Image (cartoon, rainbow, N blue to C red; front, side, top):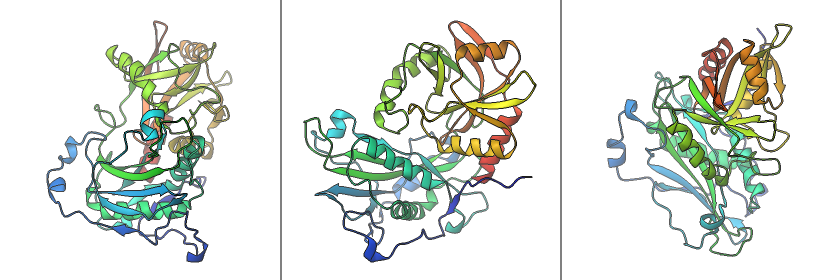
Length: 382
């Protein structure tokens, strides 16, 4: 068997590479000046839901990390008890959508009993993507040291380690966020920011449980992203306009929206996930098809990148291109559409069993061999 591709896991016990202190300028984020104010309120932890009752993104851990950017510099980082934020009603994030975020997870298995066994899955990829999102929004301070922010994140997770639920499908979801706090109603790049990280113990993303097939409603009436836009970044403005079409899809009995683009109905993403199709070519060879990143309207997902690496390692040809709905329907009619699945941090891998497009129902075998293999390997690594 070929060696596993470079998919890095980070143990919280390991220290991130540290640069000499003299190399940090005042505008950089630094873990060396971190202050920690531990909570004295045990009621939050005592009243947390039972693990089997956890709903995604509704329960929050004891602490949060906050770092302000103002006066042209990042200020000292502070881990403090989880609490509401205080913002000016003129903060530009509230008026112009100047916000971006990330999603990542910390894992701990049933046998883990110390911080050396808490794991983060490829966290450096998320931090680099956060930087890219900040740059796209013309936020200042994007030259921070990613290893320093990662060290701060690790200290937050260590502090709230007891909140990490154990077992298959459970994890501590980590949400780094940057918002513009600049109190200015003019349409301009912000001069003040707040970078904060909160964490949330979570179970399966879907109420039906982990790794259950979903059905999709393909729509060209709404557009998620377009070339030259912000689809390749994780900015808040990408997600607010999806609420209405998602609600319409759910009302019709579907789990997610399949986003299309252009006059040829090119497939782009599914809900908030990247999408993959396993298709059989005329020569009988199977290929893995997923939309490419070079047009700027597809999010460079960390799970997507991992799936592509694993597929190439295992000898499955990967085609990064935009399949059309006509191609998908033709492949399904000819029994050449073997599998389809979505990928993302929250759900990891989600099998797709059907797509409705222009009144026609496209059935897809679920769950396929490759879908199962990728699920098994990724959850095994994590």
